[in-house]
Image (tube, rainbow, N blue to C red; front, side):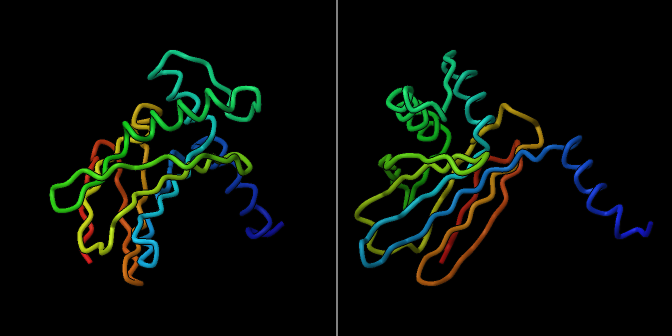
Length: 162
């Protein structure tokens, strides 16, 4: 057998024994709607663990019977762990909802009345209790320019300037 045959097996074994602790936050400035559209992708099991840890409640985000309770808890948790501000003004992230895709949970938020986005300050401690290797990757797009930044625990803030 050649090295190429072993490569997928080795990759799978590394992933099995060294799981990833990553979330992705995508923030798009929608100039036409004068709004920020925010998508937060987390691993579902990690999000459930953190909600349990923070609020001492068991939740199954996949269970349709728990949807109302899950919506409230996801909203509360993410709004507590991510804060955005521009020009010293804290932005209010309105909760839109969440959906499950495979092993990930996508949570959606919106900030209205943002005509221009020239500067965005980000504070984030999303899932900073699951594993010390937690990484939160931010992608922010404004005026067609996309900037990305990685917040690795314990670093919890950054600034985007357009």
